[in-house]
Length: 359
Image (cartoon, rainbow, N blue to C red):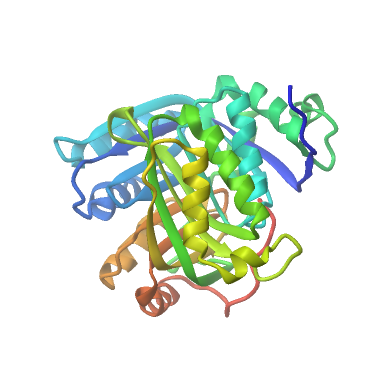
């Protein structure tokens, strides 16, 4: 087996006892709010993972005993041509922090490919990169992660698994009902001048090629503030959406990227590692990142955000909610309006530096 230098990283987390619902529709009808987020919030279903790309396609995760209820709710509001599927017995596996480094995200994806994981959803937050996978593949996935990363406190997969709390005990500890009149967040951080890339690939089997592309982007000094990947309509394709930006500092930055066209470099890298794809670029776009507390354990957070954007007539291009953060991508000219409406919707302190913890 080819050997790679292991990357030092802060943490590894597993959330078990879950169910995943994959949803896709051939019609872009702005159904995310009324057909997905609103009914889930009304039934007080907590989401531990949620991704969306304009199109409309979503992947959401909840506790195992709420999986059927979530599927039924979405099916009752879905377009007749929509495709929905329930994947029971799923878990969420995350590493943190990635610091927007493509080499960390690429190594994570490479580990999943080597563990032969079927990816039901992939998402990044400002701190963590997370995957939804079958619970039966947790052990081989973690073993591969230890081949590529080093984690403080755990010298081996065996040490990591021995330290994990029983799933039911963990769920009883964290799941709670919140009755806040205004949802609180730790911070709301904007980031402008991003490129948003979107592409479809034949299946998740060739995600290893995307991992190699990310590794090359890291060498060019690029950052990846946002990433989602999810199954497409009918499971016949895999949708990738991610944003790129130049790093503000660091020794990895190359003059060729700093002075040249970032978009042409990214396109060249993608097409060199992924055959027969047609990457689409939208620029400039902006990201907004909201952090905690405990988005995964509080129902209605995604609905509050989506409803606020709809009220301001702001188009949501892509969204991810994983671990304790929500990340969204919008057109750059709508950034100021989005900051106003979200500032009025969520109780947040004045803009501050984001945390790096994955908790």
